[in-house]
Length: 427
Image (cartoon, rainbow, N blue to C red; front, side):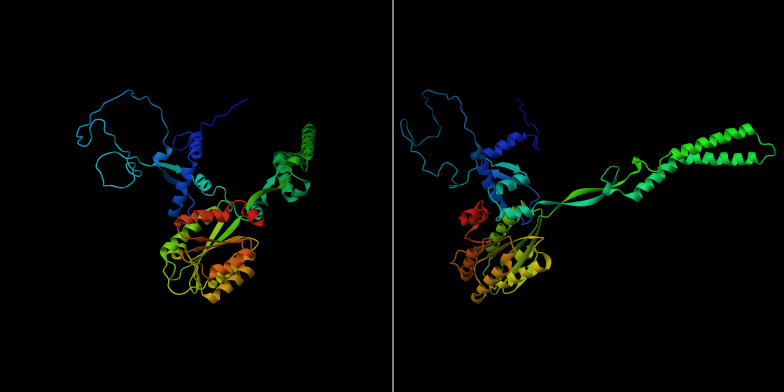
């Protein structure tokens, strides 16, 4: 049995095998650091990996060493508290081990965290391990590479139906001209010479016979050149090129009324980052549409979406109407996979919540792959949450979760997209 050992070196001149072993061994610590690093990224930033820090104590290895052994008596200078035979109590828990309490000191040496760089693929693999998109079977059909046939010039071999007659005749003519041009030139010269000899009063018969014989040979050689040869045949060449059909659009809807403070917007941004990077694992081309709303909805860029300040009330249906208009105008149902995420603190004009249910049920949820609603608040649920509960019970592609703090974002995201979620709910 043959064994192959991969000793390729990575960028740091360390074995790739050792790198993979390190990731497997400290996967728990690395995944924790990755989930914390997601907060620093832009929504569409997936072009690089991540440098993560792991506490040194988490990767320390137990060691065996030879102790001094025996009974030893030590005298420490400056002792004015203890005498020989005194018992020293164990320090209380949380003290003496870097608890963070106490005053600063100019002595001693601390331990820095271990900084470990991971690639983009490793970063996304760790971030979205054990997650999948809902309705995965349909999504897989949409992300298949569609092969389209394109003309790719001509070739010498092919099917008779692909034979290009004009191109073949042009090649035949060029070949015959190239092979017979010198002979035809010589033939014309000999025929002119023969005509001149025959015009003489006493033509030299022997020379005339030689010229006639040479003319006969040249005509036979020219006639022996075939009109068309296998070398002349040209067939239309076709090749199949992959055309990705995995196009997706991600709608980000967020309430920017006076009740949405910047901390709430930051939590929504972190959720959108996770969703965008998760979609890039399935779809090749992704567009992001940002819709912000208070009493009116507006399509904006990422900077204005997260950091503009607004005041006033909230009418959620304005954002849903604008989303439906954009879909009908720019994203045909059969060409795009549509996903949507809505973030709000739950406030809405009471008379508007039933209208939101109507728009979702009759329009949006019939054409989107998945619609996720997250309510970011520490208060009791408002009318919008109660309305959306009825929608969630009626549609499998609608989900809703409640986020109270930053620590809930990643667990809630995993809950929305965990594997076999739909199978469990169906059972």
